[in-house]
Image (cartoon, rainbow, N blue to C red; front, side):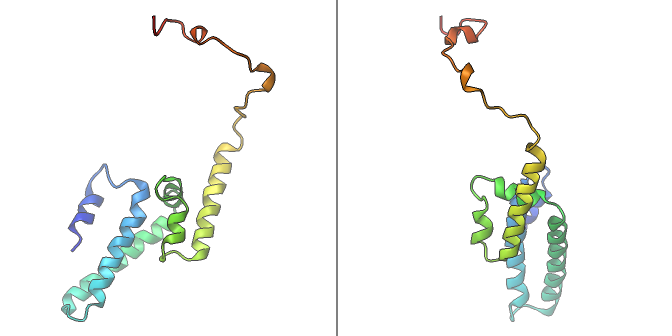
Length: 137
């Protein structure tokens, strides 16, 4: 069926967090096609239904953990647009993902001291004074 996906989930070093939800979706879609195929035997369709229930269980567990959505949003090639372009996600899911990411960002970084440098201290500093050794000589 989806031996490639099964092998990816079985390895210790992959998948990365941001890959889990898209892989579950791909697996769910493949299982849906098999389940809805009228030419499949009843045994295969029953097994596929059981597999879909397991995928649903993992979706529910992922929903309980904010890290999956945050990882997708923070991934440079996915970002929040992934949720917007993906028809499997409803508008309220997208809004909730954005809210979760913003809330976590604020909770984690709002209290950090500012790293801005006051403009009165900006002056030219020779590069050679920044190092305790000579790099290019």
